[in-house]
Each structure stands twice: as C-alpha cells, then as structure tokens.
Image (cartoon, rainbow, N blue to C red; front, side, top):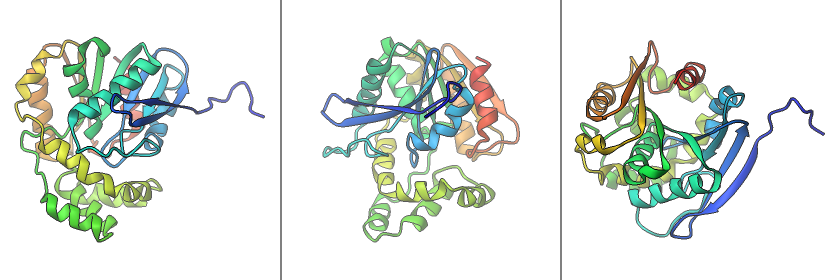
Length: 263
C-alpha cells in the first residue's frame, strides 16, 4: 500500500483521429503541463523531468505514435498525424496550461500551436531541430541500418550528425541507463527524420503562433540548433528567450525544470 505523500504515476490512452492509440503517463497535481518527448524518447524518458515539476503541475507525458506503448501507424509519416495525436491527448486531459516539447517534440509542439491554436495558450520548447540548416542524414542508409539491426551504430551516427550531440555528450548518454531505451527506439528514427525532412523550412511561418512561447537552449549545442532557436525567437510574435549556461542538447533536467517553472 502506498502512503499519502507518494506522487504515484498514473496512465491513460486515447485514440487519435486516424484510430491510432496514443498512451500517456501522468504524475503530480495542479494545472496540466503536457510534455512531448524527443525523437528517440518516450513518456518513460520524460518521467525524471516530471518528478521535478509534479509539485506544481499535473504532468502528462505522452508517447508519440510508434513510441513506447502507443500504436504504430500503418500510414506514412506525416506531421499532420503527429499534431492530431497531441490534440487528442489535450482533449483527453485538458484544459492544458502549458505544452512543452523537447527536441523533436519541440517541433511537434510548435506545429500544434501553429495548426491548432485554440488548444495551446502557452508553449515552451527546448532546442527544436528546425529544418533551417538541419543536416538530415541519408534516409536510405537509415532504413538499411534499421533493416540490418545496427541500432546502436545508427543512433551514435545520427546523434552526432543530426542530434546536436557532442562527443562528450554522447559519452554521458551512453553511461545513462536510458541509453538502452534510446537504442531500442532506433526503428522510430526513420519516421522522425521523414517528418523533419517534409517540413517547410520557412521559420517565419511561426509568426502566426498566438501562444506565449518560451524558447530555451543551452550554450554548448551544435551551431545549427542554436541558430534555429535564434531565428525562431525572431519570428515569434510573443517570445521569451532563456539560455541555460553550460548545457547542451543533453540537458540537466533540474535546470530545465527551473526554467519551465520560472515562467
């Protein structure tokens, strides 16, 4: 039996517009903060961040389609489906006070704020890999790596080329127990990269976002990540810019949580 002081993790499931089941984990109490994980993540990978926020928010960490326990769609990767998934979760758990996206999840959060503005009133993103100068790897090579089972090599190569991770960050990542969780998610990389490759590279279109948007970056991430964040901040009509000194794409969650809590 649990004690009254424990913050227990709960779960939920909703069907997206195309019938794909989308699952999520819930921790904490208070207004709802929806977390959208990165390209090799899942709801589980965001629970540590949720732990920092659970005294202030009901944190809902969703599994994007094909990730974690969410369904694997039969249709081709499409940003519209990803946005519909987020909208479905918002409608299931809302009202949502803040939508936060990390890395690829930040791109999905931005697209949701753009395409479903009535669902997102406050937005926060950490280092979205927007296709401004984003180095999309050879997708046929990615497909071959997945087909051949070269999961860890594929993740190492993609993380260095397209993930904005330095060699030092990769060493830290590989020592983290969640590294193997990322490796297990390797088959999702092809869909993630195809969604990014299909995006309109014009960052100026995000000027249509009406939600107050906090753009957070570190200082040691790849230049193209930081450049994209600068261009995004310039384009937004209602931005707040925050920088976490000494942090890279693999960010210390305590500092990230503080940036989210400070508005």
